[in-house]
Length: 171
Image 1 (tube, one colour):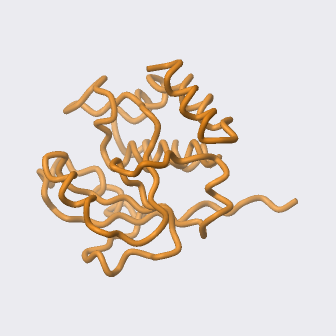
Image 2: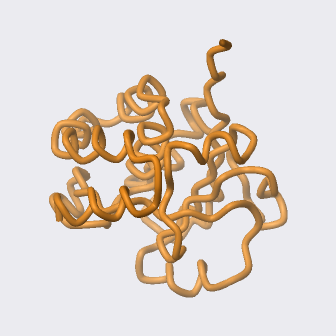
């Protein structure tokens, strides 16, 4: 059996937030993520993190798409408008997790792009990638500690029903 290669990480930078606090911009500055500046640049064969999607990400989603994870970096105030557009790729939402970033600490589902990409990587079985993404932030390890049990449980789910049950057990 072959080991899976690490996923390619992309972020669509819409520049709607304070650039000093933008986790997606930091990921691109450090070469951990590839920046995109237009919707048409989004790879159509990847998995797009979409907080408005009806389907939740599952560990076996890594088998359905090429190993490309895509985050749309936008303001939470504009997220509904951005994600209501038809966006390419396989859209999935994350199960409920707690934010560790200083702006939204301990709030449900108010993750930064870095937290979302790390959570998706973890759930898909790329735990080292999650650690690498979060290592760029002082609070990064706190995200993994705060969500350790749910992330471990989510990464074991084999169906959407199991994922939803695990999500309701924790939240």
